[in-house]
Length: 281
Image 1: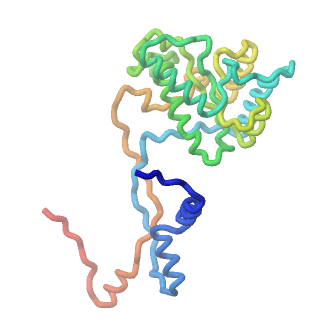
Image 2: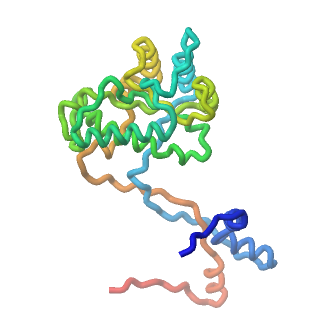
Image 3: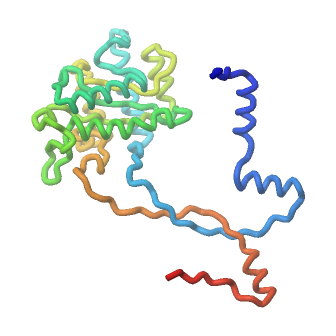
């Protein structure tokens, strides 16, 4: 077997195929180019099922997002002018590093191995508005929800305290691990954070419990004011991950589409009734 070498011609062919219209768009463009008369179409709505497992980002007003961003920048650039290093355990820099640490913690808790409580994830800041394409960080809400369900315990229905979930093998450890708070930052945050940390690009930054005490208090106070004490305590949650099991009710939405209307006119002109479809017994 001979390996195929990727050349410049392959790249040009891929771009040409990518920009070429497909499906209905290609048929419409071909009909317009040949001068054919397009059939009249009407708008119809077709029901489709939405996925109950879709996880969306938390919504934060821009003013509140700017407030959190400025507080984070003040902590990164303290009064002494010292910038945190990449090796600082108080910060996890980059999407890959954040994903690896959360996945590693989930695996460790799953194996019923005690975690190092001096350096646990606490706040995850993501520059969602600056991402192009946003799919590069689309896994972080699900990963954060899975971490909170596995490590930080399940939300209690009768009190504000957390209770251990069925996913968690240890009941005692669930009360000692703080939940991760997911904070999407407004547009322009990537440039400011990357400048503060002196890196080329920065899409995600996670702070841990190893952060200095006064800096931790300032960040906690600001996030409590912006997101509320409930989100600060329980973190970002995915409801169906916190449940032991069960079925969710279906959610049906309608998608705008089109359908031909010429067939009915043709039958009316010939004096025939439209054909009715009878169900088979």
